[in-house]
Length: 194
Image 1 (cartoon, rainbow, N blue to C red):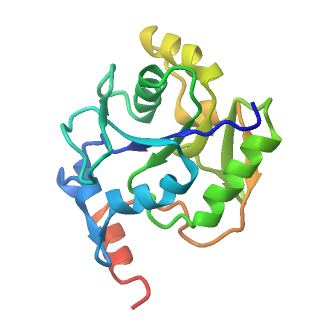
Image 2 (spheres, rainbow, N blue to C red):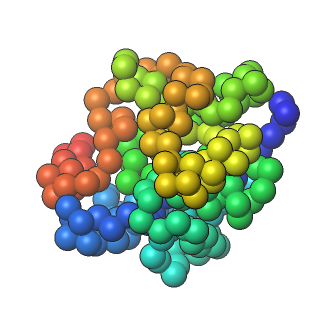
């Protein structure tokens, strides 16, 4: 469908073990939480926003409901499954909460590709050789495949799922898809632009 408007789904259910178990969504960089940055990135392109999690009860931005994983502990794929099941028949614009350096222009390019490629089950950005599966659009035709593999105990990895989609080349910028996983990642972001 050429006029489909996606549901924005923010992945925020990880345990952040390498960061001492802190809540990544509540991390503040330059006066804004990662949660609010994710909302600002997705909101212009999405009809509704939801937060995907295996453990949290609320999201640090008002008006964004929490959707719990049906298969906790199985990573981002479980979050995508939860998004598909909570919003049946809808395209999902998936975003990991800690990808806070992605420019708005990349989101716009993915939305344009969604309209241009109605046959593609997924639309993902690619910079040089890197395809990013946790900042991507997934059409509902993938929902049953994702669910059946998780239930059978042989889930697709996010990288394998990405191979089913259409990659959109976006301009390379250092760190554009760098997440916040280690204390040094936090330090890097805190000193960005200073």
